[in-house]
Image (cartoon, rainbow, N blue to C red; front, side, top):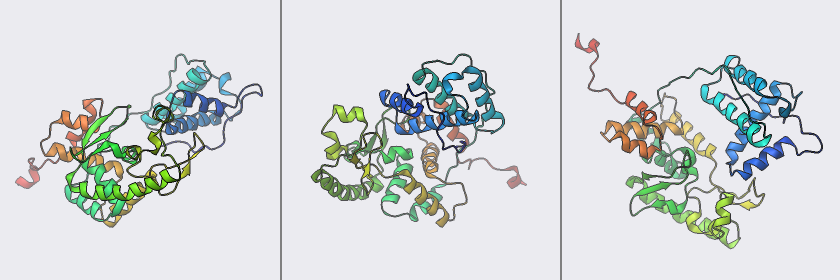
Length: 331
């Protein structure tokens, strides 16, 4: 994502008010926003303040300054429409929920929307890619392709949501906070069971040491024993325990996504795949290969968790066109 590199926090509030960062954090926790969302919002709030050289506190700015900043992102920085929207949402949140000064009419120059076709691997390329991976990394990449999971959906997968009898996986609170059911590939079921047998030993050690598994605070309050229960343990836990950034307590988190991202990139190079290949490429390939196999697009839409069918329709543009013969081959 094309975001400006900013690190220094904006100007603090007067002495009689909490620091702006503390205010943002408090509202995010009150609204149960994810830590990722909080970090993203804070990033753009900082960028907004830096744009005005940190001379003025956001409470003393408003519609015109926000409009000028969003226009700057589109015209001067050339960010994508999705990036500009992310910045806009962060500032809407700041003024509406934190400063309680809702914005009015924001008439900024809009970033140009681009419609790019997804990168899709052939079946042979998928086979070559997975052939260069082993162990846990192979297992995760196989789920991204075999079940169409997003990377963070795989990272956050809990033991209780893997149903070996029905050969399916329940994705809890995916994008848009929606649950859905995806297939569990039979080709990896045995390896996944062996993996979970090893993970269970890690869970037993955590339980003996009274170390909980990380959970959303609202869930942890509702199900107080859940953080110590096997069913709630991560399918892909981190090897080391870590301090939870919200509760500041020692917990077991899921594997960090950067590990699998690096593994996929290295495997693509080793397999001599020249296409731009990342974790999401495997999800694109899942959808496209199902379409090519004649599966109903509505079913694929449900498995991908797309709200709009038009989002799923983009895969029809990258399907194999084997039946179409080039006129060059007719000469």
